[in-house]
Length: 198
Image 1 (spheres, rainbow, N blue to C red):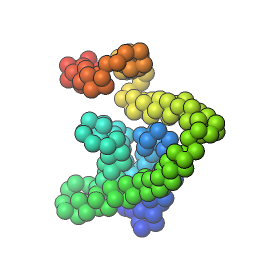
Image 2: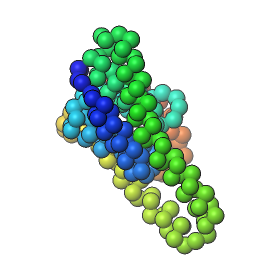
Image 3: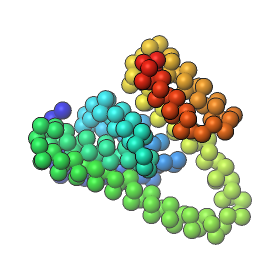
């Protein structure tokens, strides 16, 4: 994919991720549907497969959950350089893309989290603070469900991906009702994928 990004486009990318940072209740992954809307549908800076692959690779790799943001930015940068065929110039643009998106997603939320955590710890016995924490749980669950929907919708029609939906439902119940470690469930999913069942 080849595209041309101006300085204003890079500034808009930074601004969009700055705003998403403040909406990332439950982590950056909960804003993936809007990232998809902006990067793939609206601006056409990434393809569906680049978007999905960025999230899948980052989730499979060890390290923080937010690494997918760097991969999204990296892919935007690589695309703006004319693709990987551009050689070392593509690496530079890829690094710029990763830096812009990571700065945008981390700066506001980190600053706000630091200030709010200090205030919340000092006022943890207040009814309003306890109510706020309890009220955020359903919002986080809904945002994670929307992210799962976006990721699985790119894999074909609902009729074609019934196995994915079945696995999602089974894993949801297992996580909710048992103490099976998530790594075992991830390994089982990887094994099913390797065997070609999903």
